[in-house]
Amino acid sequence: MLYKSEVSLHTLNRLHDTDSKVDKRCCTNWKFTCLDINGRSGSQVNYEEISSDFDKRSSQGSKASRGAMRAGNTMPATVILGAQWGDEGKGKLVDRLAEQATWVARFQGGNNAGHTVVLGEQVLKFHLLPSGITRKECHLVLGDGMVIDPWVLDKELTDWKESTGEDPRGDRLYVSERAHIILPYHRFMDSLDTKIGTTGRGIGPTYADKINRVGLRFGDVAEVMGDDAWTKATVDRMNASLEAAGSNERVSTDGLVSDLAWIHENYAMCIGNTGLMLDNALKLGEHVILEGAQGCLLDIDQGTFPYVTSSITSRGNATHGAGIHPGHVEDVIGITKAYITRVGHGAMPTELDDEAGEHMGTVGHEFGTTTGRKRRCGWFDAVVMRHAQRINGFTGLALTKLDVLGGLEELNICVAYELDGKEITELPSTASALARCKPVYITMPGFPEMALSEWLALAVHANESGKGFSVLPAAAQQYVAKLEALVGVPCTSIGVGPDRDATIDCV
Ligand code: IMP
Image 1 (cartoon, rainbow, N blue to C red):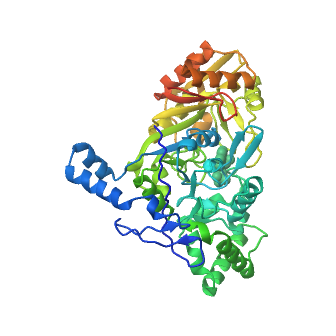
Image 2: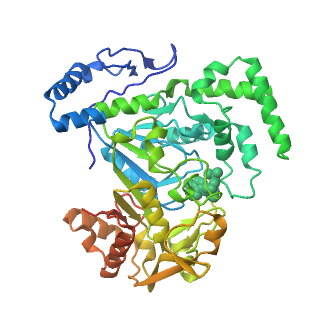
Image 3: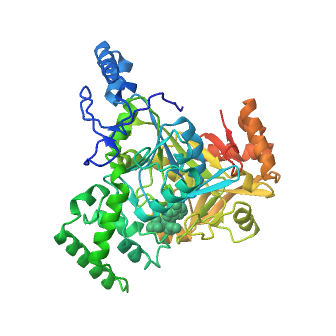
């Protein structure tokens, strides 16, 4: 369930600073210090009322109210995650759900992600900005667990400003002081990858520096600026790594100094304690969406290692990477295509090298938003999905791109693998075992091809009439019901085209 709050004050704890847009004001009846952004009036929110409501509920001591007090939240957050190898269509879903949210926060990854949102004639592509940016009321967080390329973010902000006139920095876009910065050095290192098929955006090397505890965070920039010893040690370390890795690229002290100054100048007004902001927002009754990037099978721990990304893409990291506790979460939506795709290296048991695969790639426009690479396409894989379900405990599935399968005579669904002569129903942990897995299929009847305008009309009719899922062609209904049964999770929505409204709500 989604909620829209009337509360319009957003709070921010910040390290600095006198020249920013932040108006420091303490709200002392909370147990922590809140700062009011942009001088939005504290009178819009009655903190005393909220506090006394908490006190009242606590002293009433009813089971429900004490439960709520223990959980420490008044409004649940919704987590949206990719359930496959990424590119499942998170952007479109978040964009849709953001209509009823006050905050959209990313919690991991960086500009290796790519979201396409179609608004009528306009096609918007984002890599860092959360999809909720298209909803003007929505506040946006680039959270603690992210790695952020400040130059890519700058380009997205410039494009956004050119098309809308809005500069959201510090007004409704906030960057976590704990998020790590992707510097040119990280991109140079990532460009050497030949093994994984990375996006080349510097993601892995930046996370590696974080784990090695030498990375640079947004909140550290003001502190290391002017620290010559730090700059020299950092440049020496980076150049030694580049040389050892066989790169001809080098970084310079002057370059790093000017990069730091530029980052400070461009982002000081929006760097803050975003976890605290989200926690406060939930306490103030505002709805928060935690927007995942990549997908479960690209998770560094739970994915198809080593052909994975460098972050934890799963539910367990959604709140952690956003800086709030897991008790806030109520709904966890797993996004899955009605088939499956993958970019980069690594096995994909249901990968197709035939007409059906060609159909999915062509009709589904399966080219990466970030790198433009052709995506590998295959049949829906219930083994993958059951794995994703075990890790994430989805409360609902958002099925996307069902329309793409229209026109295929028969639809295969992988229900198990054959590995070395034995049938298995769980994902093996090693890359070589996965590469030896052969899919075991069940076959369902296909449903007719329809034009995008027909699918859109069907979705609009489904939602307006309240008929939902039942407007789909019979074979499409059977297919969806089979997927739900195999994964053990109901579909909450079904995407039938790229348009914002081409989504059927399964009420
Ligand atoms: P990296 O995240 O750039 O390090 O790439 C590691 C692997 O994850 C490569 O196979 C990439 O193709 C894949 N990957 C990273 N981000 C995405 C995404 O948003 N969608 C699909 N695949 C991705």
